[in-house]
Structures are given as structure tokens and as C-alpha cells.
Image 1 (cartoon, rainbow, N blue to C red):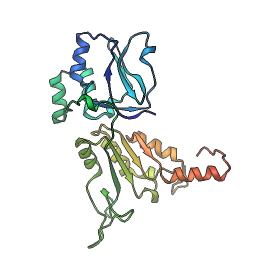
Image 2 (cartoon, rainbow, N blue to C red):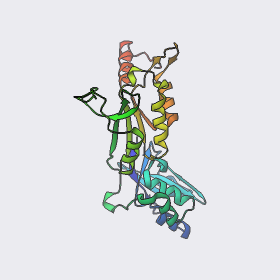
Image 3 (tube, rainbow, N blue to C red):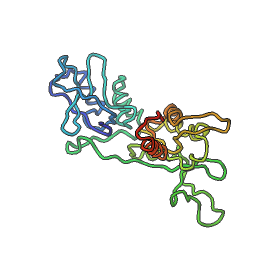
Image 4 (cartoon, rainbow, N blue to C red):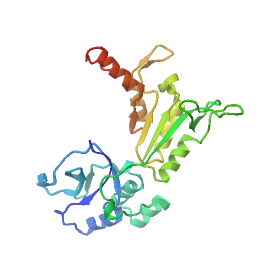
Length: 268
């Protein structure tokens, strides 16, 4: 169940050649956190081929978190979802010099951690409530539960900014994860919500940390009578760029139905 940001430790059993030492120095692999999801428990002691490059600890378990042999480098972390540190690792592996990598990442080159901060960490998750305003534009909003309108004037939907721009800003300011909650999607047809799907697609172009989407992921029948399952909705969100989905009401309804039927599984 290893999900979160953790660190690499160079394997004590490996002797690195010059190229490998340069890769370690330029990539920052020893001094940054990377995003892991459901890691496989391969013990370094079981590595008879001696290809373990780094190890990572989760609780009392230490496992091989990356392997390196020749030009093959494989890691259990997800560099593409590990922010600037992950982009730097990928850039270095692809053969870019440290100067080229710095130019690629601009001002966002990560700072090394102290030894005291190694290991799994707490996360900062930016959660953005999203809905349409009266003009039909998707905006980030906040309010008292679902009451997100201004208290005076024309009672317009409170507008805190554009979802794509705010998500990128929070990512650049250090958020470890971005979550969009579409707070009015329960009223419509999620798969017909082209603006929300476009938000996911555009956000994925510039945000390189996990992206979660919630709201409206449920079974429904559209205005033409076609049935869609919650899985259909989740699948479309994943293909639009989401890394995670958040189930709310549908998870409750499924549990209620399961107990009401005496433990019969419906597949829904």
C-alpha cells in the first residue's frame, strides 16, 4: 500500500562507475523525494544479479526501488508525477547536461534535502472546488457547503480564478497533488461536460504531480436514454489526464446496496 512521497538510498552493494556517479550527481536522485504508488516488495537480498541501484524504506520494510544495468534504468517511483525533481531525473537520464537541465527547468531546480528529512513525508494537497458561473465558464470557487454565491449585488458565483491557471500556480508553489472537485456535476451529465474534461487535459500539460478529480462519478442515464456506469465516467477522466478519482455518493450507495441485498455483489 505504499503511496506517497519517499526517498532513494543508493545500494550499499553497488560500486558505481564514472558514468553512474555522474548520473547520481546530476540527477539529484539521492537528495529529493519522488512519488511512489503501490510498490512491489523486492528484497535487495533476493537480487542475485546485483542490479539494485537504490533502496527505499516503508515502515520496517526496505525494498529495491530502482534497478540499473547498462543503459536500462527502471524505477518504482513515478518521475513524471514527481514534480521538478522527477523532470530533472528524466532529463539527466536522457543525457542532458546539468546546465541543459537547469535551462529546461528554469528557476524551479529543486533544493537538496538534509539527511534528517529522508524517508516518507507528509503531503500538501491543493483542493479546488470547481463549478460553472452564470456565464457558463468554469471557475474555482469557495463558500458555505454548496452556497458559493456572493452575499450582495447580483449574487454571482464567487470567482477565485481559472482552474488551469490556479492548478499550475499551486504546483509551481510546491503543492504535492492537485485535486479538482466539480461541485455541481451531480446535476448534469459528466461525460457531456466538455469544459471539465478540457480542464484536465490542459492541466496535465504543465502540472507534473498527481492530479485527482471528484464529483459526478456515478452511474447515470443521459438525455438520449444511454446508460453509463461510474466506471465509464472514471475511465474518461483517466484518459483526460487524471491520476486518481475520488468517489463520494456513489461509494455510499454501493455499500448500502451491498448490505441491503445481504452481501450480494452486483458489479456496480
